[in-house]
Image (cartoon, rainbow, N blue to C red; front, side, top):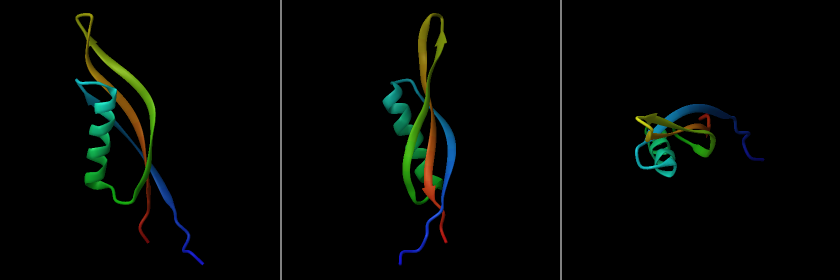
Length: 70
């Protein structure tokens, strides 16, 4: 019988000047530096920062799902 697993969800916000896809990659790369056992990720929110009528940064709020170590 397999051992039961317990997962946790943590939230991070990441940004990029290139676009939403890059912001997601930036957030995921940062999460992998400190979290082990990542099994999934959910994009919760998309936002942009605007200055002088121009988009200056693309931002995403991410939920990172990872399995807790036993």
